[in-house]
Image 1 (cartoon, rainbow, N blue to C red):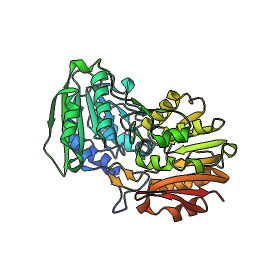
Image 2 (image 1 turned 180 degrees about the vertical axis):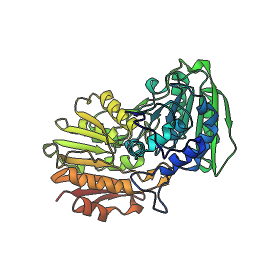
Image 3 (image 1 turned 180 degrees about the horizontal axis):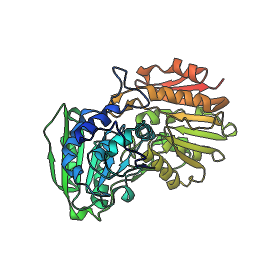
Image 4 (image 1 turned 90 degrees about the vertical axis):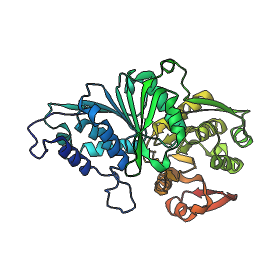
Length: 419
């Protein structure tokens, strides 16, 4: 996705001073799909965004074409801020389709790109959904919102070391309460010098420079592959083992998470093969459930869908590793909103209840509504969730009559049947 700003005529409302333009740009952003008015809701520009832009400002002022990459922008503050501060173009990677949509919506706000551009004849923003050589090739400055897992940070750091310019500067920022010494160690495995900035407004940045020569051609840690023989998994799949492939940012990586494990214990109660022609793994992650569906129902068409590009790539790779890629389609979308109406006989769902580091259940409720739309009459949604969340009434409203199938001290499995 490419965005270019070229003047049809001068933008009289755009301040000429760079600091004033930056303030105007950041002040115009909204945390789409929200508008920023909710007191406990997300903010479009946080202290980490501001710290990273301040630390990067001298480098951005002298940046040349192809120098700047942004990874993990939430609503566009880093991407649009970097261009405002002088970068002639930015390549920006947003893993989730929701972050990509938020960036796109903010870039489309009336006149905002004119303010970003200032008095330059043109600026360019390219949005990608994968961290790879196309994104990072030749980059000399990378701005990164620190991811929630060390595995994802490892994958990003290794790819920057492999594909970016040898003199690249990686600025990685986060909230102090979520940062650990292990993050420094991960970066130090790929960079010779790693230092921390002073904390400001409870945020801090790590500055990594000096790509280690040996990392340029070293094997990448991710995507990782494992062969699983967990009893619950192989019993549900009907095979001696299931291979899993996972990128660093995928929940649970190459392991079988506890919620999915408990859902698999109910597989013998799922609908029979004669009733399942189309099945969905909603929020597919590594694609283990999509692959189980394809193995268990060999005549069925299976869709694995997730908002994360890394998860979609992992779902596709896991299906291929188990020889079912011809019947598993992996799609990127928000909470199943793109699923065909009344097109599924069976949906499996282990909904998230965290968004980065915050506990949130709104994604789960959107997924329930999507399942209700996607199921055929009489189709079934099998859902596993933390028992304390008490989702049964919400499932009944969104899908249809819901019964408890199994429960242990931590998880509950329900079956909802479409009316």
